[in-house]
Amino acid sequence: MPTDTDSIDWSPTTAQKVGAGVGLAIGLLSLTQEDLPAWVRVAFPIAYAAACAVIPRMRGVVRHRRTLQFAAHQAAMAVIAIGWWANDDVSSAAFNGAWFVSAGLWWVLERARS
Image 1 (cartoon, rainbow, N blue to C red):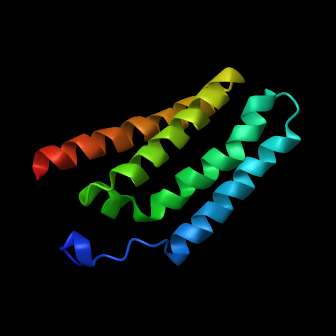
Image 2 (cartoon, rainbow, N blue to C red):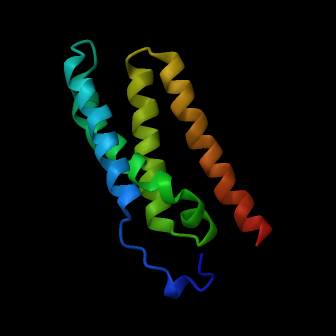
């Protein structure tokens, strides 16, 4: 992995494209759940696609301080956790919320380390 951030090709990798596709598929499953609020069914495909697209490159995003990619991931994770919470699915909200918090701590700790 190159250490000079200017020499890194930050265009989407195949893994990120696959991640976005998988996230979109996961999010589209919410369309079949009539008990979810309408805003959640609309938001989940976008949020899951965004979050899952960043995850394959999360180490580089954190290490090289890719702020916009990290912010997109965190915003998506917040929407996902809040969406599950709005549907009273506490375990799904907690799972996604835990990753949101973990990623945030990783970001802060990496900054302190460097």
